[in-house]
Image (cartoon, rainbow over all chains, first blue to last red; front, side):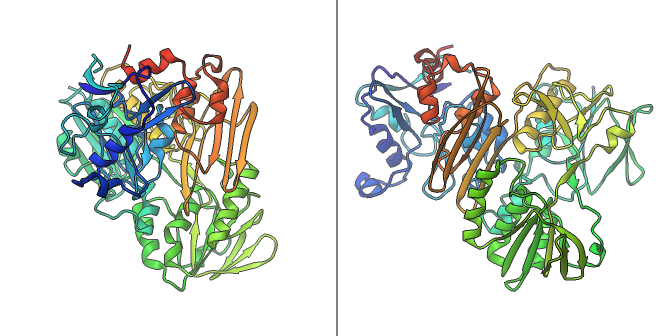
Length: 145
Length: 410
């Protein structure tokens, strides 16, 4: 399946992916209305130090431990896409305790949110990918199951 | 065709069903459910009382789960024995279910010490099941003075669940600190202080010795009045079915890495078992939900003739209480690295070039990176150890490793 991949050599550390993600998942039409003057809760985040940076989001693991560990059965996997039913999440953070890539964080309402490859909005191609100015984030098939 | 019987209808049972169905789509599966409820996430009962979830959202799987997986569920039935000679599981209504293999996923039950006078306490509750939670929820009022015996995970999540519905909560424990199974003394102290600020009263190193109706007579002679008593002293694994067969049991049913018991065709999974803790290097009861699912899944794959071993089980807990969140994993032995701050402590333990365990209260972002290092015994000399001390981040990995994670390179 197609996944979001990152190339750390190309990442500028500009954090635009975080803003594009938060906007795309806000459900709002206007970017200023969605983001201006507010804390943002993106499902992708930049990690790095002085010499390197890169974007971290859910890997949609082939054997996702978050799905197996969730205490409320909120996570599920369908056709390789790991998604969450936020109405079931109680914010226990067991998924944060087990995610080997540190890709999960709470959303604004205190329940878990995660990258669902922009399948629940109208973006088509994930917004972090479309908006990356240096093609450091791509959406490709690379042979993972 | 095989015929599978699963005793128990919790998370391990769901894991077992999904494990079986990963290869065998045809054979019959019968689930024996003592509780009269569709499978629910057991830890959700405190969130249910707290109002963070509701009865429509606590199902652990979608409503059509059993139909989709071609399972028959017998609600309100208990397995009383496994008859190996006839190859049948005998139920409390006298009926018997033939099996080619059986998985005991019977969970655990509350351990209640023989307190003198307990039988005369009318408003007393355990806190293990949905029925327990509903009964407790119905019994408490804004005037209730609640006494909880036991300051472990169950007792404290219960306290959080009912806090807004009652007048006061006192928690007592014979241990000298709260959450003794997951915290050392200092970490327990941080959480205790936080809970005391919210209004929970603690009496530690002291427990009830006797009850006189609505009064608990403590071991030191003091008395506590209460209207509602919650017994959360501890739990015992339900080992009886396998023990009666002559199978190997200790505190839990002994299982190997395939979740086989010492009896042929009898598997076990979840809170009723003792599996291998890779951080501890020994078998122990690991009564935690993710482990229950993974053990169940492993059992199911093997029952259906596949090959699967669970080799990375460790104790781990994610515990939020009144807004302060703690995460713990592994075993606390070896060299200690520590950071502290206001409502924050991080303790990580390393030994023999691997991460053994951690306790983090507050600031537990990305803690799963630490957890996976413990589970997979990743050699620390392959990581940037200084970065690891600073915080859980994929920056600790080599560039090549990051290319595998984020670039999909095999």
